[in-house]
Image (cartoon, rainbow, N blue to C red; front, side):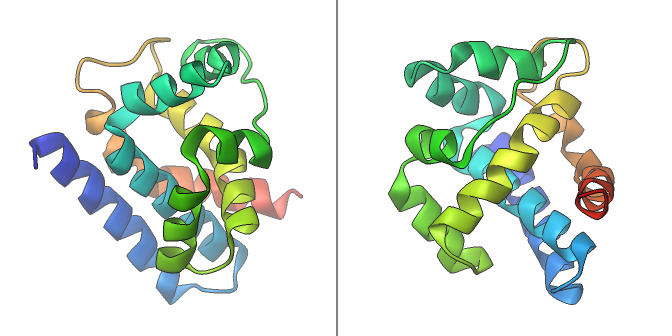
Length: 150
């Protein structure tokens, strides 16, 4: 396991650990979503791996919008399922609770925001996003604000 995998794993674990203490609250849901997205980053080989999954499924334009400096195109739960597959979503459901459709919906809400935050210069950084993982806590705060506004 490389340094990138270790950093991604630690970030995902920290995010999911924080969620357990605030379960049932809007912020807990945000932390849970960040933990799931962190886990997807780890399993997929970082930002470039996730972007390749979406490009391989014909969703490259949407994925590029999350990296670019313009507006982010939305992501649906069905697109998440298509890109990552039902087995990955079932594993996330077992690890974080809930069911595959709920997991897909949360990832759909937060993945574009996370990728946007990890690519502030409009391109995947040389460290494949690992340097920005310390911002997972602040992203969870953004997620909490998003959920409260719904």
